Image (cartoon, rainbow, N blue to C red; front, side, top):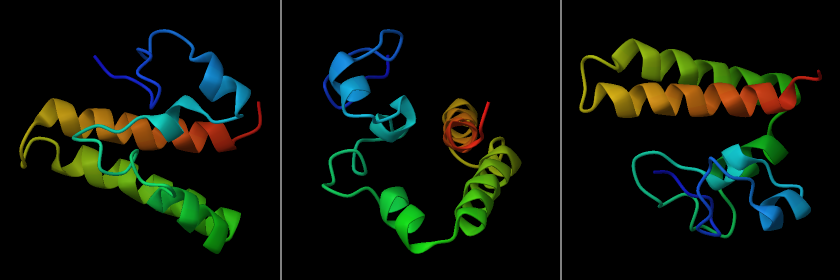
Length: 96
């Protein structure tokens, strides 16, 4: 099971994350917790340093990377979850 940084299962909505205006993708990490435990996550820094087009390209590139390597390295399921995670972050940035 995957949890947000407040230990709420992602199948549920964490009121603290929602109140902070933080998306679930920001609070989730597959394959460890080394990023979600940082004061500033790398993709938060990149998002502030890059143009919107550059950051969207970064997210798309990671989707491609994890899908392309999923059957060649480690856990196929974990790489596919990582690809979905980057795709969800990209969807968070696309207006409805």
